[in-house]
Amino acid sequence: MNFIRMSCLLLALFVTGIAGCSQSKQATPQESSPQGSQQVQTGNTDNPGPATPKSTVTLNYTLTVDGEVVDASEGKEPLELTLGSGQIMPAFEKAVAGLKAGDKKSFTLTAEEGFGARIPEQVQRVPRSQLPKDMTPESGMVVQAKSPEGQVRNVTILEVKDDVVVMDFNHPLAGKSLNFDVEVLEVK
Image 1 (cartoon, rainbow, N blue to C red):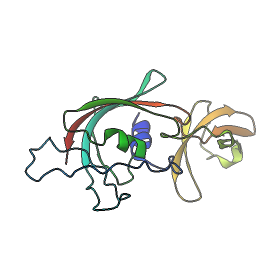
Image 2 (image 1 turned 90 degrees about the horizontal axis):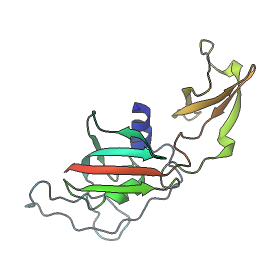
Image 3 (image 1 turned 180 degrees about the vertical axis):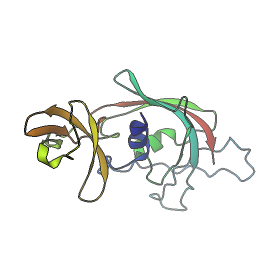
């Protein structure tokens, strides 16, 4: 599941084209605020006036898709990320903005807010001769492919034929709603 955690929560490779969500400016916490009462700030610079500071947020999460848990921080280190730095989907940032340490929230991101719609043209027939010689492709196998720009993405093999392999270059969660349960542990 490490692939899902990295690609779903930390990589923005597959969410290009999704417009950033605008955030309403929130008051900056006072220096004298006790730790834990700080609110999550997204580091929004779109609004006129001074930019809000970025928050580094540590949280536990569970990601459910179609009723199945596909990733969770349980049994792992909590997730730490700096909001407003492009580490995560803008809609996720919007959903956790304003939360404080100890807050829990459940929310759903639409396919468009998550990994986008499935694109039929991303399912391609690849000649077996283009695969590594030592690879034995199997239906359902997830392999890594490098784009001409050097980006690495996971690709799912859908079908193996004598001379071609049918591969799906869509993100595995493309076209799916993402259901998150989060608990904010710390806001810095």
